[in-house]
Amino acid sequence: MTPAAPPRPVVGALIRDPAGRIFVQRRSADRALFPGCWDVVGGAVEPGESLLEALRREISEETGWRLRRVLARVAHTEWTADGIRHIESDYLVEVDGDLSSPALERNKHTEFAWLAAEDVTLLDENTLRSGSTFIKDVVTAAHAWRADPPGSRTAL
Image: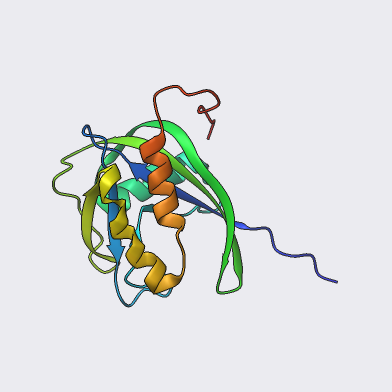
């Protein structure tokens, strides 16, 4: 019997602006996974890459911004898509760059939004499209985070 492949590591960046809003971007309609859904910045960890290195790379590739600091890990979960298991760690982060003008990967993302806590209902669209509440759940968790709560510091 062949042992199951280990889950593929994935990172997500919940980018927070000075007003406390969280950045989301809409996946293009032709994406294989979660087409047309709102998503946070992130993706697969490349072989030999640490979680922190992957977080830096994904932020740069998907927005043109630079990771300034990681505030907390707000989610850690395992999920399966297209028969591949993933283990995802999502981090609340702050970045440097022009927050009004992300350099979206236009072949992968079509629009962006900054969501305040009262705006997360926008993410209900994902439930209709994919049946998943995951992105809404992690954005809500990011909004609930406060500086230095007990157990919030998580090494990458």
